Image (cartoon, rainbow, N blue to C red; front, side):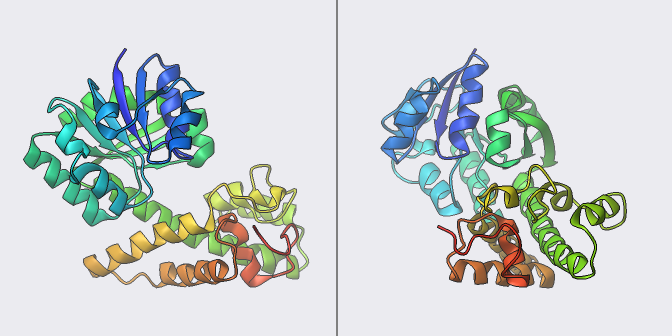
Length: 304
């Protein structure tokens, strides 16, 4: 079993690290929020007081951070991973960050003599806890193979997406498509209801027809139709509006740098901005239905 360094013990990082502990590894965990480190200790994660302490003696280091700016800070600043980790330590960033930052981290790690992988995940907090996340990995072939055994206790699927930043590219494009599909499901659910269709009947037709999608089958925005839908729980988040807007922002930024118009993504970003402006940033993404029908079943009067 290995010593594993972990930086970032939030809603995703803590359960992911906990699954490595369950697999028999020693995980040394650090977070800038002291309470997060204390909470993670309940899962068997060894508390670390600094990045240096977290990576000390580690065969591999994982980072799970909110944004690209945090990833740059953790890796590139004084006392950061590239300064204090052993050169033979494998570095894996599982944050969802912008494409350009991911490439910059690959370049900086390579120049400093490290193996680095970008490996964002899909599956949310539920998947993190269950160890069923989908990992999308950007790395050289031999580096992917070296890291794979450490990723497996956290994963249901592991894909080698390609070279530098390919994992981030796959995650960004996937979540952009998810957001666009979610908007379509919200509009479809309301229109089907106005036409007089029962939600159950419409769902059963659409999910075996050309309107099928993952958010249709998993996030249907009406209570009592799909067991896994946030609508059953007052639209408390599985995937919060603010996080989906962040991911769409990454896609829109990528569209600008790559010269690709993303009209549908921009439309959904605008719809999410409206929810955020009205105080719904912490609600589930399928609160998108509120923009179409403010009186939709299951929606609270406000969200806090």
